[in-house]
Image (cartoon, rainbow, N blue to C red; front, side, top):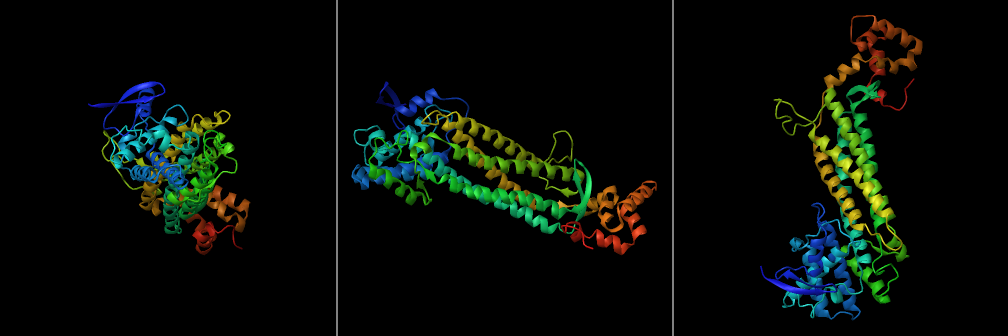
Length: 457
């Protein structure tokens, strides 16, 4: 392999001659190799958008020649379009609050801009990664800004996926509205209800998730771009600080706003902890839903779609694998929320040093939730109710008599239940018909009465 030699403040180093990255990236590749996770590409794409906004602002204000700014902008579009993904190989867990990632993007953009301008890679006297691509910027303002841009896009995708789960549950709520069954508390039989009402409870929880994920964009719109190293804007001209936000709004199409106190925006990540908590809430609801569906499937009241053979030993065994996958996704998101919390809380003074860990955990949670929600919505759509099984438990449950307490009194219900328990028959519903009459029993146990928010005289 042929190499070119590049220089930095630590000395010189050889870089593959065809590589778009440079010496700073090469050092980072050697320094950071923990695990297998790379910097999320959505963050790289967002950084390229931020770099384009900076290049255009510097061009309009006369700080960059139009030809150099134009080449950088084109290079930014190439990166955002995924044309140079192979140049971003850095490990996600890196020191420096994201400096290595920022430098990786600076170098790739500079060398791609050089290529566009007809110059060889590494000709930094023409277009420099720092003097041109990173002009009037710091890692500490472009990285957090890019992270929020990336997160907004991810949250929009998640909100749509959550809406799919909500819609699937609501359709089942209507489909199963007339299926009577026994409710359960403490894993014991409780009062009668409908299967539709059971699905409505999950739909209601997921509807809150949908609203919360949608509202997260408001929390993420305020950025510290232009604040440079610690939010004071040192090293950047005042007119650039105001213009670069306008450029980024136009490029991203997002309603971004410059923080009123960029020092505070740079030094704190509580907003990211807040939105991570929203993801944790959704993860909790997915865990609850998944476990409930597995229980109902085991009881036979519903039939989950069969997705794959369940055993390498037992023929015919089919497991609720997607519910199990959803539960594991939820557990991972809950764990990631703790990482976000710890990373944000361990920032010191004017910087959040562990922002790369925070960013990786948060983006991973968003991606895995979106993916599992899309699959779960389809899976829920294929659920079938076993009305006969629901009715079997319903007709035989001693708690069925609870529905008649308002009409015949508690003591009489106790007496009827004791009489029934002394008989060999198992169907309590038939026994109640014998005692109270079919019309009365069918009226009390009608689906609309069981879930009608209170009994009717």
